[in-house]
Amino acid sequence: MEKVKHLQKLLGKTASMIFIQKFSKYIDTNRIPILELSRTAGKPDNAFSKTRAGEDPYLSTFLRYWFSCHLLAEKNKVKEPVPPLDSFFDQEVQKVLSLIYELAENGELSKASKKSLSDLQVYINILTKNGEASMQEKEVYKEIIYEINHQEE
Image 1 (cartoon, helix red, strand yellow):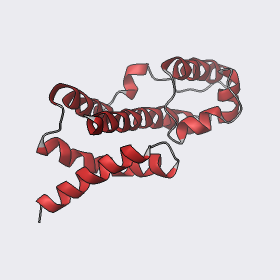
Image 2 (cartoon, rainbow, N blue to C red):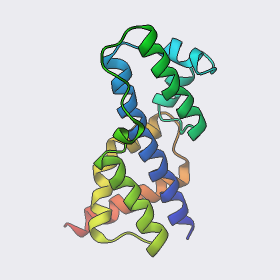
Image 3 (cartoon, one colour):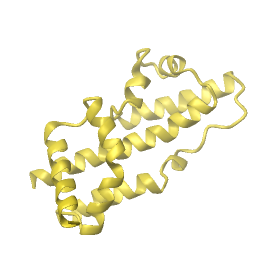
Image 4 (cartoon, helix red, strand yellow):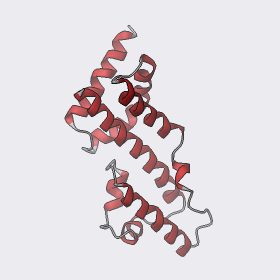
């Protein structure tokens, strides 16, 4: 059961990271300054940079960024409106959330779901590199990837 808990946490961080990256794409495309975004949200200067690096923000913190983004887009006369929140919940985020749900319901992942974990490798690597994944989370993920790779042989 501990493994399930650790994998759920890691997948939650992964879903959050993908969601934030979708939001960040809007910010980058429309040249909204990160420093201004952090300050307008009432956060320290480098706060959004940490969030972009994989830090899992509280919902209230993200909502402050999103609202601040609206204010800055208006102030800077950005032509493209800030997307609605649900636009960041794309298929990739939903896929990760479905894995978390499957773990909660079944206590394990099906073979097909385990294989879809390997699609998340790039995000897991970023979380690991930035120190956002715990040792236990990394170990559980490695075990599943090892199992997948050795079943294919």
